[in-house]
Image 1 (cartoon, helix red, strand yellow):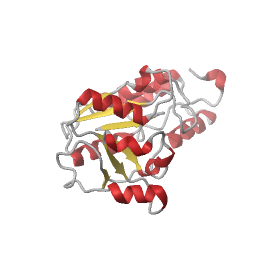
Image 2: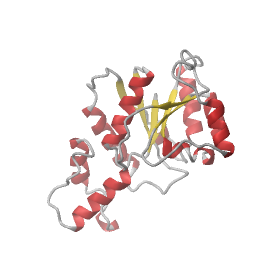
Image 3: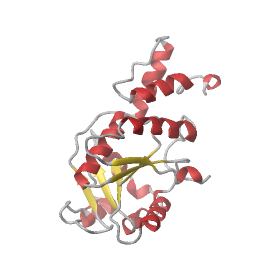
Length: 226
């Protein structure tokens, strides 16, 4: 299973969603895929190098997770100085793993409802299953082209047993109302108030909080950015 994102910064919601989804899908490996240049959103606040370093810090904290899954970074998108399109990444991963290996691409419901804006979105299922986790305040598409596509391809875990790609699965995972945007705003607010320490250790792994503090990330002043 692979989980793509800007991870700006990686937080406990990302980690919890990935581990819960991997357990439900009964996968042995979970790869986190940090994007380099995002085609759909504003560019990340921090460099690819910082986001990769934070991700590596976070994964060390769950390396011995109770599920026994192997967690790792897949840096394919960071190696290419171009927009990071999921279709290109899935094509690479399919070639890497072979035609018959089941592959899952994990997204949140907030991403699913805008999937029809993604480059080559109707080709994604040729290379992987799309696994969707709930996000507070978002519902699955029910009409239009995307609603029809979702209804046509949605399947249960039992339906996809042994298949390599081609289906959408809605996973019943615990919803965590947390976002990287919220964390960045909290850090900025704390620094404006001259807090002596970052009070985000319940939102991100301790090692990530320390990295953010060490490198003075997410400052409002451009001249202060690391």
